[in-house]
Image 1: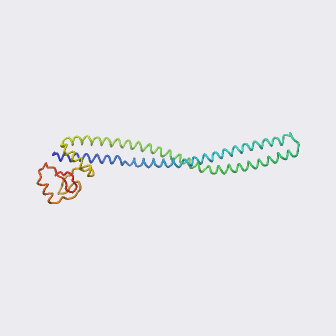
Image 2: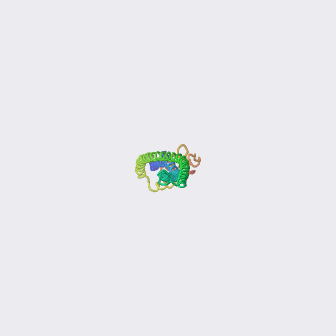
Image 3: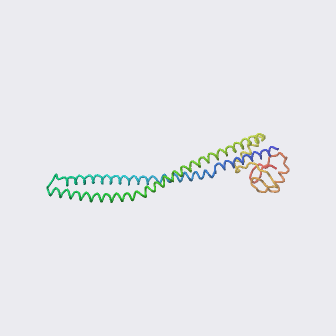
Length: 237
């Protein structure tokens, strides 16, 4: 195998390595993982205001429950005083009855307020419960996808290491100057530094070389280094 043919072998390993790296970067599981993480972040962000609203309503409910309890305690105290027989003063007894009636109305109002708060709290809690379940589902999906990405990356890394080793073996037979030129051209030419010239067409840019250029190349020695005058890539005849 000539030095230029050996360089084509190097190009083959470089191309396959580029394909593996692209495949590694474009794993479908990676895109799914990014989407799942974004969805989980949205659920977390949406849960914050809902959780704050639930706590606000829960505080209001506890306050109303405390008010109802304390008012009922006052009713019980007044009721005990009313029927204990400790007072026979009609005015005092009437005052106790009026107090009990007023406190009873207050309990009714407080319980109405409490019911209204509970009605507001119910959908908020249902929404938060749904978000909690969705976050748990997304967390499990994220864990699964991370494991899948790690496994796929490990498999591709093995293939990449194998290509790198074979590339080193192929490159060892290519003169350093020729290899350096190939690598410079490869950087600026979409990863293709050398291509075969077939039927007057460059395998790199796929353009047909002018007849005069082809005639000039044919007159070169078999081991001469020639370039495509269209794209500048090294050509192997």
